[in-house]
Image (cartoon, rainbow, N blue to C red):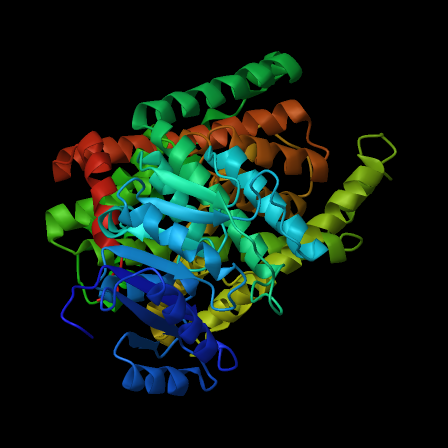
Length: 611
C-alpha cells in the first residue's frame, strides 16, 4: 500500500461465502478505487468461523493484494461479533460494512462513505423502506422486516425506517463510543448501534437504496426473529423501565401491592370471620410452631457451612446462621428479593469471602431449596392424584364432591387434583434434569437454548444457566456433599411444613391427620414457590394466596380458616426471621441499608469476565 494514510476501512462479514467472496472483494475494490485516492482505503474480510473454503480464499487475496486484510475466527462470533473484531483492528477513521451478497447496489457506496467523510454525519445507513422506495422481497422476509422495524420504532422510539439494512458507515470515534454499551453480537447489532446512536444525539443519515435479495437469507425466520424480538424487549426495559426502578420506587411499589392485596381481601373475603378464627386459634400450638421454625435456622447455617466448605471456605455455623438471618430480613424489608445479595456482602465484609464465592454459594443453596420444594410438592401431588381413593379417601370424597354434606368442590376440585398431579410430575422431571445436567460433562443447556434462538441474548441466557448449573455441579460433583446438603434441605423444609401444620391444628380443624399432612406439604411448597416472584417484600400476599387456594381446594376447611392459618403461619415465620435478623445485625455490626446498597455493587464485581 502507498504511503498515504488509510482513511476508509470496509469490513465484509463473511460466513461460508466461498462461492462469492472473491467477486465481492474485487467489486468492492473497484468501486472504492472509482472515488477514493489510491492508498486511502482497505478491505477487511471478517471471516466468522467458516467451515468451507472462505478462509483459504481470503488468505490468498490478502497475499496477492496489500489492500486486503483477512481476520479469522476459530469459532462463530455472530455478525455483530465479527464486525466488532474487525472494526477494532481497522485503520480508517471512516468505518464501513455491507453484506457480502451485494444485495445493495454498489452505486450507493460513494454516498454512504462520503456522508461520514464529509463530517456532516457520524452514522449512515441505507434504507429499503424509504417512501417511494419499496424493496422487492419475498413475502415472508417482507412481513418479518416490516414487523421488526415497526416494533423497533414503537418500543425504542426510533425514527428510522429500516434498521437492519446491511449497508452502513460510521465515524470511528462515534461508533466506539456507542459500542461500549452494545450488548448484541449477532443480527440485532445493527439495530442496537443505530438506536443507541440516536439516543446519544449523533447525526444519522438514512437514504434510499436499490436493494435486491441474492439467494437464501442466513437469518432463521423462527430462531433469529424470535431472538431479535427479545432484544427489542431487553433494550426497551433498559431504556424505559429500568431507570425508573429506584430503591424508593421498588419499596413503594411493594408496599402498594401489599396494601392492595389486603384491601381486596377485606372487600371480597370474609375478613371478619378470618379475624374471629385467628382469635380463637390455640396460642399454645402457635407457640410450639414458632419454636419448631426456630429449630430450622441452625440447620440453615449448617447447610450453608457445608456448601462453603465445598467451595474452599470453612466458617462456623453460628456466624453463617446470622448472615442468613440478616439476608432474609432484607428480603422482608425490601422488594425484588434484594436481601439475597446481602449475604454475599456480609460474608465478604466479616470473613473476607470473595463476592463470586458468596454469590455462587447462594445460587447453590437456592437450587437445593427449589429442588426440595418442587420434589415435596410433586411427590405429595402424585400421592393425592393416584391414591386419593385409598389412604386419602376422606380427602378424595371432599374434593371430588361425593361428600353428602355438600362441602366438596365437585368437578373443579377433581380437575385441581389431576392438574396438580401433572404439575407434580413436571416438577420432579425438571428437578431430575437439573441434577443430571449438573452431574454431566455434556452441555445440554446450550443445545436446548440454541433450538429456540441463536442470537447473542440467547447466548447470554444460556451462559447464565450454565453458570447456575456449574455452581450446582461444584456440590453435585461430590456425592457425599450432595447427599449432605440435600438431606439438610429436606430437613429444613420439613420443619417449615411442620410449622404450618401446627398452625393449622391450632384452628381445631377436623379431618384425618394423614390428609392434612399431605395437603400442608403441598400448600407450603406451592406458597414458597409463589414467593420466588419478587412482587412484594417477603412475598406477603403471594404465600397466603397460594396456600389458601390449595387448602380450600383440597380439603373441607373453610376459606376463613385457611386464610387465617396462612396469615398466621407466614406471620410466625416472618416474626422469627425479623427477631433473628435484628439480633444478628447487632451481633455482627451490620447495617441492613448499607448492606443492600453495597450488595448492588457486589453483583457487578462478581460478574464473570472473558479474561
